[in-house]
Length: 134
Image (cartoon, rainbow, N blue to C red; front, side, top):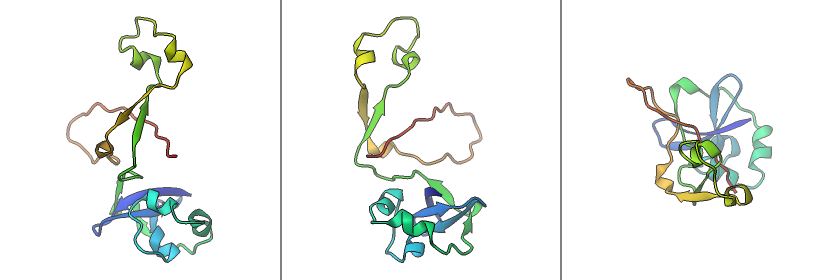
């Protein structure tokens, strides 16, 4: 089961993506009010168990919707500095001992969340980041 936040022209929605690349509205499957992102879906008790047993129906093709960031407005973002080569910026000097003893991170603004990119006409340098939701 893959969870996603998507937009279909009526606003953002939490959904379930199936192996045939179709997305299903989680709120409709659960019989709840609107679920605007994966975060609001996960707040519902037993939601994942109920989705596993739900009758999915046809769903909508992923080509018909736009994928968004899973959490539209997380409470906070911590960017953990995980790669030594990035941390020293040049890869030519040793990092201080604290690097190896502590989990280093900085807070980032929640307004910086973006979903999968739309097709572009020019190259953009991007790097993926891995997030953790607690």
